[in-house]
Image 1 (cartoon, protein in one colour):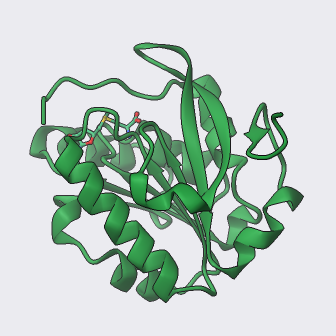
Image 2 (cartoon, protein in one colour):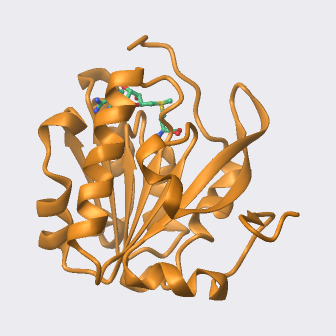
Length: 194
Ligand SMILES: C[S@@+](CC[C@H](N)C(=O)[O-])C[C@H]1O[C@@H](n2cnc3c(N)ncnc32)[C@H](O)[C@@H]1O
């Protein structure tokens, strides 16, 4: 994939965080975490139990680790960055290791290639299907074809390339039935829009 990307901008961080039910019991994961800004904010301001950034490229990972080292010790304990290609990780194993009832996967995947998005979508789908007790929420800047039946809502996010980019929110696990209980910030629930 190309190495020039856009990022989500700070005013929209809360719109992503609002997709989860109980942040103190949730792991926030940024798949392709870049410089680590939203991941750090998830631990610092979002109040997540744990925040994890997964980044393929060393220079971005180093930036995120530098950001982490500037944080208070209590935040660092809940904030991890991993230098890895997401294709080399087993999402299901990771989620099982964290042993939390809820996981938020933020995927700013607009610049991921079609093949990569296909593989990632299938991996998320298999993980959702095999872990029905975990409420897995996915916020993606490019839709995942294999998750269409798990589409919950569309939310506008402000990105460095422009305002109000439509992101897709998918919810997996048995808990996807209770998705309408959560706080909503500017979202349009699928089925409520028309
Ligand atoms: C558009 S940036 C998003 C940065 C941050 N998540 C945000 O939204 O502000 C996408 C990031 O994904 C990383 N990336 C691309 N392919 C990846 C892969 N296969 N595994 C892990 N990270 C990847 C890129 O290096 C880049 O830093």
